[in-house]
Length: 244
Image (cartoon, rainbow, N blue to C red; front, top):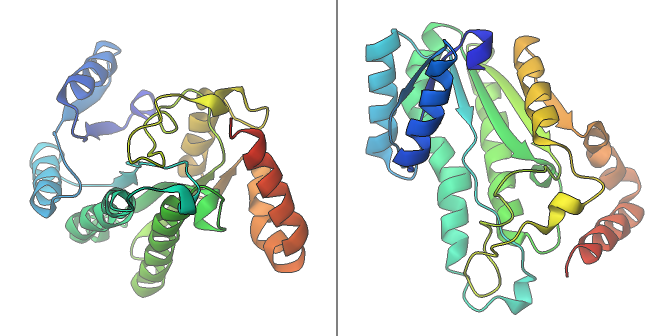
């Protein structure tokens, strides 16, 4: 996005990675700044927006990209307390950011872009807490879109399996610890990260309301309504194939 001329504000809890990414962007002649932020903290989210406005004068887009996942059958989980972390990051953290940014976004008819998942549209085995948090975010953003009546624009990017991320390796396992491995990178259905980000940027540029990566994900709501039994069997089969 910086390569396309955006002034990028980088926000996460990892100062070291933020500084490296910021350096990569600025060395290529683009504009970026770092604001360390824990999105589960309301004060941090307010600080993020305040400093952004102070530096650049406005907030034109809020990109919701933070996320943490899981991979465990519910009945095999030792302690469900990590479900709160899933909700705090995937849902409440996004709510905190949106609440802080909304007054500024309304001033410029800005955009809220959520990098979400097909699991916002349908349940998914071994992802009970993750799917629940993404369902919550989907419902929140859809309702807010209705309330604002075009004063702020929205994009939902629904992703399947993506290669080259740490989402799977950082996911919670049945014991509440991180899985530490990314087995789905070898999944024939997985999309290359570069292809994924390119499609998201194109969707933002064309002002789409939604983008499905891969495209076949867009059929999930239809299939779940009219071919539920077949669809569930396909999902279960795919999960079992990548469960070892």
